[in-house]
Length: 98
Image (cartoon, rainbow, N blue to C red; front, side, top):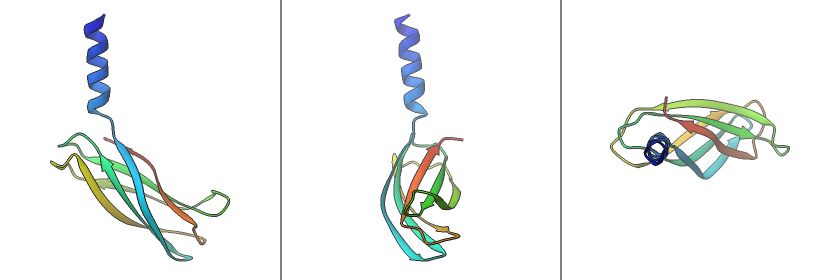
């Protein structure tokens, strides 16, 4: 039982992805740029869903981006999200290993 628990813990940790938005910049009513870092197992490709939100936390723009595998444990990225209305925040909704 201990071996099975250890295996599940290692398997879940190996496929874990952590993403943190570090900054965002609203350009105008049509775009916002999000800067963020992703921590994942080296050698793994990563896909992230990004969101732009308005003052009421409604989604006014989104984008899914894919990154090739990298030898780095932590990777920094900057992406621009097209919006349908002025955003007041840009964030990383989720990241995962495809």
